[in-house]
Length: 412
Image 1 (cartoon, rainbow, N blue to C red):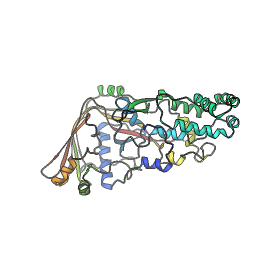
Image 2: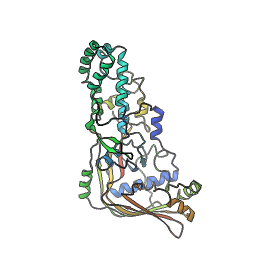
Image 3: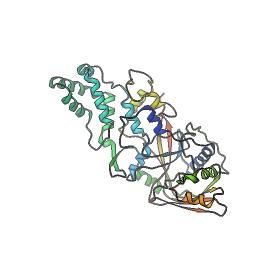
Image 4: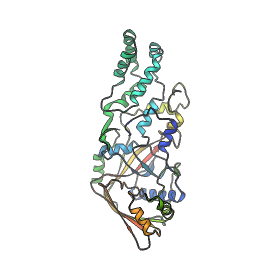
């Protein structure tokens, strides 16, 4: 997740902006769907009660092994056939944190009566503390309340308030906050500046992936041709026009970009080569996530006994389909061990257009993480008919996350 589980300056509109993307044209939607269905069948992805999505992502370069898997598992999946994720979007752990602090404390009326006007100050203080950056040393609520009481209350009132608060600690709400703040719920990895970034723990590990690789056979040769694939998807993606990949090439030369995109869009695309082993591992949040709190909030939209009217988020912004930040969750990750393949866009590109494309950084389709030069090699070439090809080598020794499955949140 990002370096915070909450953002005190966030707004409901900002939340939507962080999980929305650009408009996707009909030809690119079709291509994305074709590739999704082909890869899903090629790999034999288990989609029982879930939806498959081809993905790429840019976790911090210091995130390796389990940290890399946690980062992908914590993303909020769009309801689209393809998805791209970066370090600046909303995460499931952040959305869950926002949920907790958008609910009323549920700690009974005794603490409120003891603190009187100071009760709202305590609630605000707690929210601001846990919504900030969670480092390796975080106070639990009991210690945090004692700290607040010592500076905000008289000694006599503080003693009484601490006694009452200790009893209220056993409520589901307070236990959920303590679990979220528990340092053991997170691991840390360095970002590009060297700062330690927290990542919440999920089930699934790099060791488990390696075990699946070891017991699997390579996929072997494959050949995709957008001119021949006519499969129909069983799932109607709600975000297909808003989320996913809108172009084949990244082109930094803006004077060439418009013509390049016009030629590429709707062109025949082929991908052929060989892939190594594939692993699909289930993933779910561990002890920091309390489904009881989510269930309670989900079942009571607009209930002011549950939701804090002063909270920054409401039921609609967190649960409504397709934009709610808790409306879907990642249920498994699909990883590829290694592979060599060639992508070709069959269109009459000029030499200048080829040079503009090859000078740009990577290529966002077909969604292998070409930004990581340690893991992937990518070389461009132009054929005699003007078509442009890119030869990929997914180097062995890396676990390439190339897809995920997701489910819609539903509590009956």
